[in-house]
Length: 236
Image (cartoon, rainbow, N blue to C red; front, top):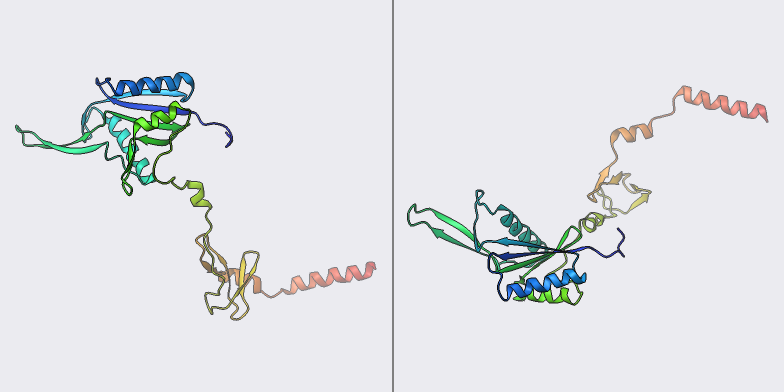
């Protein structure tokens, strides 16, 4: 897919069941209108309870995985999903056991562009105390716009890997300037020769490479060269 091709927008709406009442019901109806009018390509509805035990044996593992996914997105963006999510503890009066609970919001909307999670609403920028609500996100979708989350767009993996390290041009041995001969650096002052590693550090040329480069010409090699020269003279 090229950059000019539009992304397929999927909206996943999580609501507390069975509280499909105002204003939640109104928001869902607006999302359904967005789907029917083509503002979003797919609308998925998911339900979760008011509170979920934060444990491996919870029957709502899918909801817990969704919450973890929201938090990872928020961390990358530099925002927070607490609130609308929050945690509390409860202690059983019978067993005395304490359980940590995740309190879910009435409604939470996540948006995908193709397969990439591009927004979780509501969320808050803790540095400015500004909140981007689900109402605002749904209203933007209704007008045909894609809501822009708060925070900063995270750097892509390709941008991180494409960044080239800075390379110093001074000799690591004597500090003099190096001469770059197509990736092989040499110092005219002290004779140091080497290359640059992927991390941007100078690496001296190996002894074996130096010895092979400095190895004197053998008698057989010289005699072969003399024979070729004699043949060339005779032919002329």
